[in-house]
Amino acid sequence: MTTRTVYLVHDGATLRREGERLRVFVRRDLVKEFPARGLRQLVLMGNITLTPSALDLLVRRGVDVVLLSHRGRYRGRIVSGPSSNVALRMAQYRELSDPGRTLELARRFVHAKISNQRVLLLRHARRHPPTRGLLVARVAMKASLLRLDRASTLDELRGAEGAAAASYFRSFDDLLRAPGFRFDGRNRRPPKDPVNALLSLGYTLLLNVVEAAVQVVGLDPYLGALHAPLSGRPSLVCDLVEELRAPVVDGLVLAAINKQALTPKDFEEQPDGAPVVLPQETLRWFVTLFERRVARGAHYAPFGKRLSYRDIAEQQARKLARDLLGEGEYAGFGLR
Image: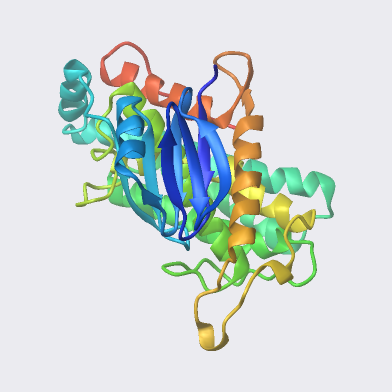
């Protein structure tokens, strides 16, 4: 049986165990049922209760249990135990304590991120007449790539990344073609409009995909290269997420809006700049769209074939592990 991820978006539900199956109840009504066998990750969104026997089954099977708020904010996770790959962890701590090694790995993460953002803009230009904003963004992002290549410190590198991100998001509104949606810049914690709400939720879901891959490989998720160590932040996971943001989340949000899989009626915008609300039905539908995109995946050049984005995330984590062990060289994932 193939491994899989299950999302539960049923605020106030209770997850119970019956033998080797898990059952979701809202009050006395059974709303979902699935086997624990083959389950790789369980994402709980909102106020969901786990019975002790259900938790015992999940831990025993090594399922990664992720806890999100009803708005999609990360709250924590339950894992079955730390990695036993001591040699890899020691290599990670040693290599990422070297400023030169850290800088070069961070450069590869950012190069892949900016390149994939440019590919997204180029794909849009092939299907629609390019706007002046998109043309300016593509030129500015190419300049950021050149600046990135010359960066000699992490601060210079992060400056190039920030400039590219600013150019990219200044043109993002030009990519939206459905009526009723606007993007006036990135805002978060919490997001105040539908587009930002979808981007933030998508990035959180992607972070969970990548962190599961990092845990499987045996790397320490909290020590990265591009993102400085910060209490409670999985910095290495954030590093690996960067190159997948545009292919997975940005592309999904644009497709969902432009193909009208989501419309302005699916959101509850609040007055006076208060955070936008995603109703439970909208959350469930977006999670479904996210899983479809992750499963569809993309061409993975090292294997010469299409892989799911979940498998791509794991292969990128394995590639990084080999680099840290001196058994290969890391290269970021790139869209064709």
